[in-house]
Length: 269
Image (cartoon, helix red, strand yellow):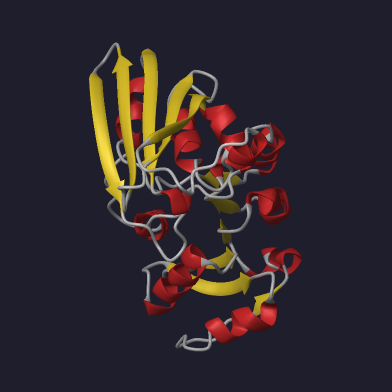
């Protein structure tokens, strides 16, 4: 008899709630086992409509209840969420990819105990092509991100550099630098850039521009890769979720990732 993977969700925002509902509706090979949230009482209310009730617990109580944790929480909580699972030789699906930078000990912890960290594709496309190209030589990776203003307001980089975008009337470039620098300045916005850098040539060689555009309704990413095996470019326009910092496709990417864990046929790298 096939054994289902027990899935825990850490964080019940726009992504976490949709993922809980999808697991409750049914993802082959996976069962929703537990959820954690900052406000456990409010989280329990939000989950009241599930067909199969699950415990809402603190972060520290998740690991004994599940085989896989999906991190959908603020980036600062990443170590607290994933370390117990990695130490137990389990799997952590990480959405806050930017929080992995500077925390190489998490990868070492996974290596030492037989655990695994998975960064899903999220709001990007073409990571399979980048991963394949990285087996040869990638000469450059450049990404240009354009976002509606509401998806960027509150970013630490804007406050630190006194950049006001609320009243702009035309596109404004607000950042140019590396993926590592972007992850520090825009921790809730640029996990996609870090995922791209981890698939390719690293966060210090992956170049990034960020534009605030008052005319946009969708988060737009354009990627250009030059490698010895291929040169390619990709563009995606993501419809924002209830949280304007996150695209609707993000949770669908996590669902596809979980479905792939136990699938008899896996398509893509």
